[in-house]
Length: 199
Ligand code: HEC
Image (cartoon, rainbow, N blue to C red):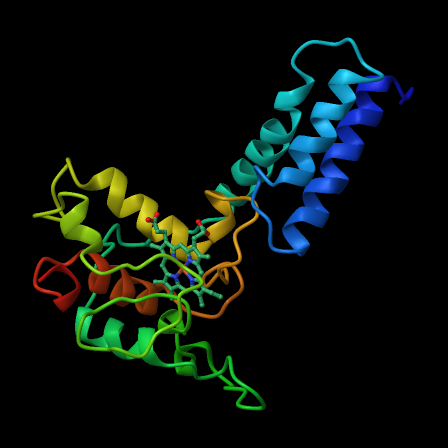
């Protein structure tokens, strides 16, 4: 392919996005914006180049979304009590503690998120998930109205990069950390109205 200023620019932005991701930035990371901005201002008179960073992120997210495996029986919610145990467990993710089976792994969610009010030991790298379902108006997770948020929650846990190209959150399903039943249990923890998350 002939390298036009536009393809060079796109390559540069893609490379910067990868660097931004690696150093913990977000798709709107200032590096990408600055680069796109300076390209617009200096070399290129092309319109719309400042949106290239977002376009690259969108493409990466779409590719990640395609990897999400949806529940084979169409049921998204399992048992929130089992989900709470998984969310607390760092099994298989910590130090030399390697588990041999996926079903022995924990989700490690509290390492980065507040989830229930009862568990007061949690990390804050990710947003608080307390009242996750309630705040999103989910009163019946099986209703048509709840479908988009139920699917988003599943997809986010399966492959966090499907919705945020630069996400720091482990891709629990995609990376084989958690299996389908475990993800169901964690989705229930976040969305079941009976779960302490939504009390
Ligand atoms: C290493 C830290 C880390 C771990 C471990 C982690 N997350 Fe996250 N999570 C994040 C960050 C950071 C965000 C916000 C940025 C993003 O969108 O990815 C996030 C976002 C989310 C969101 C989206 C919130 C919203 O309002 O849209 C959900 C849901 C979520 N995490 C659930 C979980 C669950 C469930 C687990 C355990 C299986 C988990 N996370 C483990 C860091 C983490």
